[in-house]
Image (cartoon, rainbow over all chains, first blue to last red):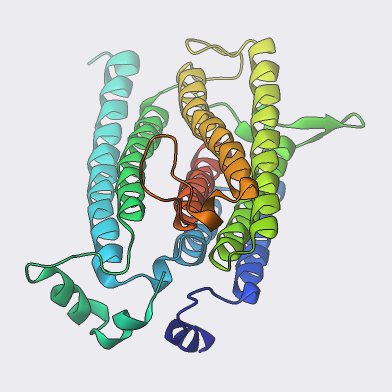
Length: 112
Length: 234
């Protein structure tokens, strides 16, 4: 745990190694998500892989490049909790989209 | 980032209730400009989320097949179509620039003026390359007949979502590039070393400004991660 020792110094910078590691990981994860398209995975496997690589990349960028891992919880929580509203919005709009396509199929093709 | 006095306070959730729980500064050890940038980025997150959610809603609810992005965004290399090639290169360019920015922030806090300046300049050039490739992508698609109201590949909504989402992201990148060039000049001139007062403010310049600029730039990269996943790969 180098970072804990780093926190005790007043210079407050992190070792260059951690940035290079995260940088490398982001390259590898981007390469993997490109490979998902390259090998043309379809359906559930494709969506799962895309989401896993996406969340890993987003998490690494936020935690280390944007320093959230080292911030106090007062800041971290004020940023992350409002985002749960987005999850709620996604659920609502997913239901709405299903309903819209249902009515379109019903009226366009079956004729009500 | 961190300083000595903060280590004497409780951490984690207990620390959060401690920081929030009485008449005191809530965000300890965080410069006010950094909090403001985070709040701005949070609101920007909501804007991009609304775009991506409306795109997903439009894509799910259309009864016409969605264009195959793997083919639409393919490039021909030696007569062979390579799927999503340009988008993959754009992704790598943006990640590279994000890495140089992270290092610029580190060297800024270490008061390494030269390294900080060159790395910000490298970040700006990366961003400029990204915008250039996006211009190429847009003109290619417009040439092929993609319009906000129609396109030759499938569902008509495709064009409007494509131009709206990538255009809004490209605007963010362009604004970021402008600021990166301005800040590269300020760093090289030594504004952050001698505490020169800024153009719009009477307050002294400090290297924390580089971290704030970095937050914005990493956010632009972060949004691209989601656009890449949901718009191009999905």
